Length: 316
Image (cartoon, rainbow, N blue to C red; front, side):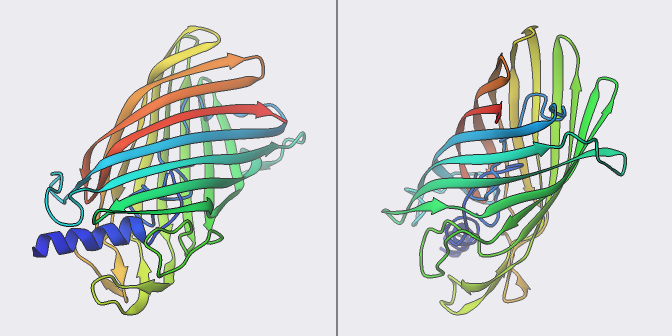
């Protein structure tokens, strides 16, 4: 029974109290990579290549589904309020990138800013009851993206900021906003050859405190802070023609620290998950079209499910 109580508290820490989705540039909560404004597994094929000057829309449509919630040993919980757990999250990320005509250099990299807005519908089933919220999630801004190129290797250094703009109410089971800031320094590499490419995006999430929080163990108002987390997206693809890429892609998430409640670390709140699946990219003139699926495994202290994506990149 104590184990079930602890896992239920983890659920509230990592899913219910938290937020929007998503997430490197990244779906959905204050930890676990599951419900953040920057969805996990969002970016993929040749993402490190700098586009020509102009303004671009990077549009990400996603669907996440799960009917399993795993404990700290990776086993599906079969008893208690999480035995019938389900999650259904649908959303769309609108991300806008501006590449200036002028070649502005910072630390040797070509500068370009971007920002993103996400619309999301979240449905969670806990204790046999469904809870749902919809709306605009936390705003994502990246004032500095630095693009580099060394032969066949392309790279980007950048920092994403998640602003606590999404709707939040500490009394709700499901929230759209995190109610705290997150800083996400990242590095992205793409090794692009005529017939194949490999891309990796490596992120560190540093979270601020949610000072308007109710501890599910006591019912008392306090503050909550998710621990730092490391995560990366990856892609390895073959190019049978100049217009097509087919390959494997996915993501990995690992909490580096336990969460804090009231300034004290809460044991066994670290989460982990790995995902892999097929992906395809088609270049249609100046528009890139991508479809992919990601299947999670090895989840610890969090849901284990599937993510589906349709996305495109186009000049405006």
